[in-house]
Image (cartoon, rainbow, N blue to C red; front, side):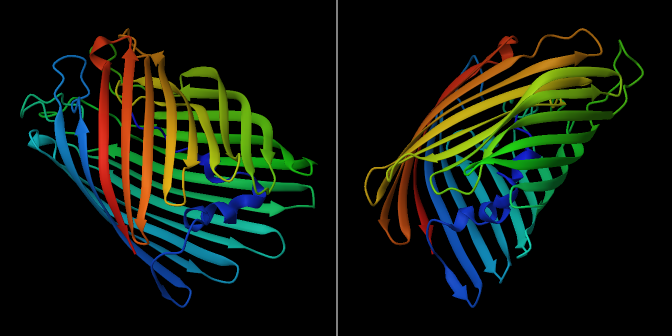
Length: 404
């Protein structure tokens, strides 16, 4: 299942809010310019081959897919503030499995502001609709895929108290839901989340800060359902707490890092307190003019999306290496791991521990100013206590990006 968007990754340190808001535009200037407004439309056209389009352990079926993905990026820059926005639409058409043809669309808006007196503000809003057609009533579908919607609004306010000390207040509201039809699909469960966090940063060297972070989350889960064994549905509300400490980089040209670890508590259905280890880490290191290394990882509790009356603890880690082969050619290698563990049960159910691994090799060639060619080869495998949840697959992609 899709990873929960982490609130704490909004900031890489109290002094970096504006820099993060501008990262996606830092590499090169594209598009039409109207005074302070820049508009950059694009379209991706891709051919994709997948060896296991249904993500199944048995009866694997391969297929060819064609993708059309138009979109637009907008950027407006003021004196001490700016707005970055993007919108996209994507449609996948399968050669044989027409039931899997699907559109997806979404948008994102970031507003940032920084005052000369050390006060910084970031507000971000995001919506994504990922459509799927996997009904159990048509073409022998698995009944697990269906329209998924997620809306997020996040904010961060940072203040530089002194030359060496800064503080940041963060907040988030998130709503994730599925278009469930019990006659066509097995149940999946969404939730809403409201959370706040407070982080204190204290300079300990010229290039590093000591960080202390605390957060609180409140969930309302669609998964609180009555069952035959438990006719009274559990409380739909859950609360989470975390306290972490660690280190982060100050503004440097070659390395940005943030490493925090600590304890997390999750009171699922306001009836069972779960305690676990939690971490939040990210690193971007420019090793040389041609090599860049990136690391990321996180751990957290959340309500289960697949099993009613269940909580899940998720762990994730990834590493990526980018190599600028030549002025026009860029290659990269990514490795990722994710583990999900059931942590709470109102009635005895099968264990749903899953481990997912993936490796991806990518290359992008800039053919000319507004035209780039790209290709990727990805292998993904999932191991699980439940044999029905296991699968492996290869996926190859060949595409062209047209951007003005």
